[in-house]
Image (tube, rainbow, N blue to C red; front, side, top):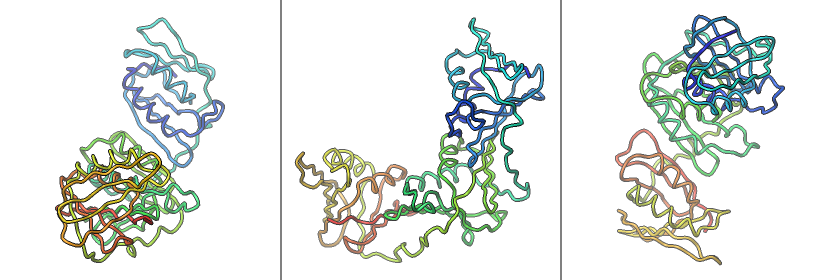
Length: 366
């Protein structure tokens, strides 16, 4: 195999491929990136067995062929050299990399491409499309609420389902819940709810643009997601996702609204003196103002008042400040409403005016 290509074109794709890889063992095929040169196209593949990645970039192929190279060192080599043309040549399980602008030659030992795992293939007719911008918005509104408790593995991903005429994403860690829905086009067939691991969703957030469509195919054990030149697939998380409908309040007695950026700034400042194990802060809600304050400690305390719109008796609610901060960060509106019935029960966070998403957080013990 022999081909030439531009370093900056290749670097971007190899960086993504290396994100997929989980093994750092140089003699493991799962530490290697698969490359195949044919018809002036370089196919790049990487896998950690659960998540698979494939893309194609234009190159000038002098001799077709394929091999696998150690991803960590391959990426390091590309990062170390300036932009310009590179020459790759594969001979006797050794890959030589030569930049034209520098008098240096790298040689990587390789593993035969036939040792690389086969990727699962979807049925073409099983795909449906939706705007990439909508899909990324759904990920952004949910992914931070995923549980990291491996004993409750069924909450270690995002629920993705079609419900009536909507596509829905939900994430929960048992103390908070994030929900978003989008209108489902008529071409989207019904499919059962699936639990998508976060790794593939993080890659989509980092690498997908905001224009065009994303193609999705759902099978019993795998989700396939294609956009641009990228083809991703992931094994699904097995198990029964919690019945999230039961924790969504039908109606709540009180509502107060605040400026989103003012609340974020107050949380940032007050959290400097919050006990870092519990992350507990208090909201003192009263007509015209809400107090954001920390509890007394050996270090000290902090308190900030910000304007709010509220009609009701003064109450104090204890919360994990991150549970307010994270949804506020991914919202874009100016005004946010928080709805509650009593200090010990669920609080619903919604943008004003209301749109297609909301967040539910449970208070802490005072």
